[in-house]
Image (cartoon, rainbow over all chains, first blue to last red; front, side, top):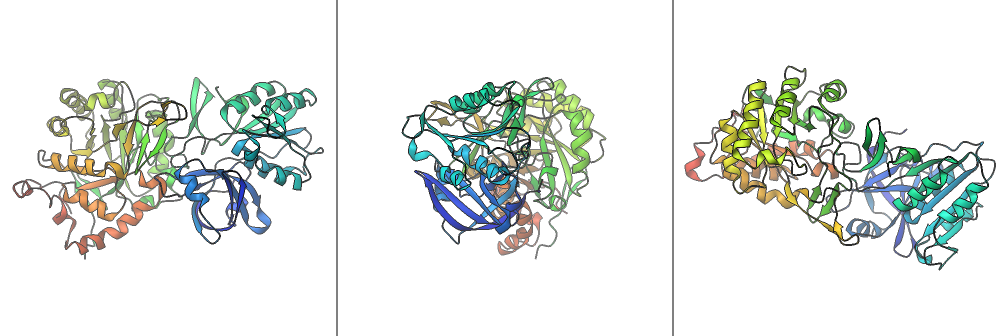
Length: 258
Length: 318
């Protein structure tokens, strides 16, 4: 996998992806070599950089996307960037998703701002598998659904769920995933989203599908030195805290100790 | 023009310049090799190492605050044997001074790890961490009581001939009393300060933001506090001080030197700007010159009260 570098990348496009959600498109040959699931660690005016995974990776024209929700001072500053501004980025960092097995049915399940790295994976690999991947995307409410149209432009109709029923099916992504797993054997499930959603994905998939989960955590250095961004995993001697930045962000479902 | 930034600390420990990577922010060094010229650093203080592996604290482990960083890592580390086998060989390929920060739950554990690291190729000094606020037993417990601080320092002193730094906590009424205790026990250098005990609340979750509940505050927010403590200690002990706390640039380094530090450690800023230490080292000569100094030696302790200046022989600056 590409070794991350410190880069200066211009913003070449900015879109309002949903209510309170912004996508910035950066131009960078180095970042455009990223694997879906990898991330950029972006300098903001605070004390820590902000890790954001790639929402799209277009190696043919050296473009990548960063789609985020405005939740605090760092993302607010990022959302205020405009075309021509440059960002100071470490990246691409971490271990992305493996390419899907072309012989097995594939589902991608995303919640909230967990959807973008799955879009990057589907954009890169959807032509590999015989059947189009099953896409299930969830959000709290209709205004927060992201990247639905991007999937449609790939010719894939995603199943949408919202907690409040304001769009698509009322409820969360677990119900449609459960239904899909009932009808597909030896499947592979890629997921990214809040921890309770990932726990449900892992539980539903146990014994039925291989799961790859892209995790998020409060992060320090981003390159494996500070041991801040850990998650509980199954180690040789019980609980072992492993780093999202360099051991992940993508882990296999059975590695997690939840 | 100041051309020589070299300093000499006790027991013949020569650094090419006074800027050292602070423990806990620089891993075991090699993680940063592709972003930082490690060989150009005065030294690297590696993450705390204990006799056996430590699990560390539950996440979240970091939380950003205004001009500060609150952390509760809990000294997760793979243990001294793995450090010697896997990490030390990578780090010692860089021409810098390697300081190993050591931790234990008991005085005996500090002694064990010190003994194990003595005579290891590439280990140039030990930094006894008696000030980590994020573990219940050991750590800061030893740094808050002068008798305990003395006992740990003396045990490590008896176990090694390596230059011995002792890293002090700001979370005490009088850091000077602890500094005097570790000096009396045979410490060669005082590192000051470790992080400041703090708390953040996640209002969405209605609970402390960090998995370890409280955490240690670092970054620019603590610089005045750190300077005050260095300034106080410098007036009461004779051994040199390595100052740290919120350093962001060469001017900050000069502040610590003027307050009585012979060298500095730089940490939190590295997360934002991995190569900032290299930049500080490049800019330091100009900043010293613009302040009217012809050598590093002239700067150390210059801001101390008049009566104390002669007392500051500090590290013999080369």
